[in-house]
Image 1: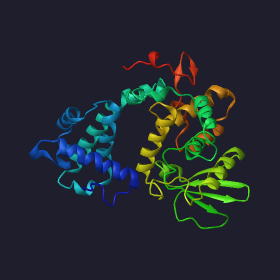
Image 2: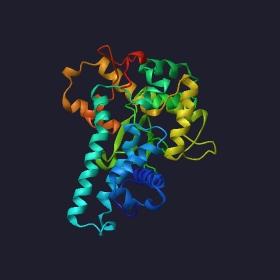
Image 3: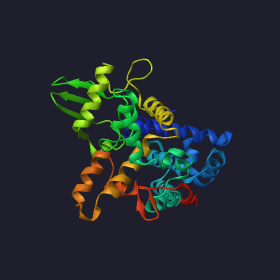
Image 4: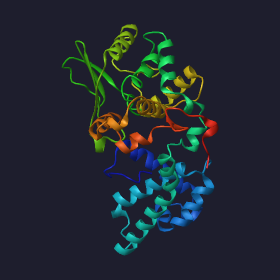
Length: 319
């Protein structure tokens, strides 16, 4: 069921929220299987969620609770049976529940620790330098080498290269995300990404080494999209996420996801630069290219024995 129909929510978020809300409704007892019951009985609904999740952690619960908050915010008109006062009380209850659930997540960020789910993936310990070494060992022009290059030679985004069109000169792109090749200048424009509502557009001018990687790949495999699925078509965001995870895990020999690029990149950046001499504007400029705030930029680094960019899993608490 589409609980957020016509709501002013990004399509990707809407799809995710609807999925979680439908799951949560299915977790409820037979005569309580509705979004109205979840909202009206928050404590009972949370108990059912916790009892039904295969992995019951604050991080896993977070997206379900956020989905309810989004529904409360955008679909007030479906809750007309509630008085203004009743609605306000319930919304405050859900905000409080979210704050309680989010507290340990925020604490981990403040301590720069991976989440429990991330710790279960062995790729969490791979450093930026190791990624660069593996990248340069791969055959020139290979799609795997280009994949790692896109996430190490410029500030790494999320799974936003899923349907990135290749256009030349003044050709008008048909996709929201595209790479424009013009003589020796290559520019990447992203407008379809998680935080697009806040950041509007992410723009990258490719450095010479990345232009070389792209050109070599396109010469070896001519195509109109940066990455293609097994059928030679543009990826969906979901298929790109799954494909990249499988490819990176196979190449690196450890379970690796795209978000680990962001942690490795920021950890290396902070470890190799004197942050005390960098202005807030400089940090913001880099953060903008990753589509997140300067605060999140700092929270993306791993810390081990006081040094950024190093992580020993034996020294990271699961508490």
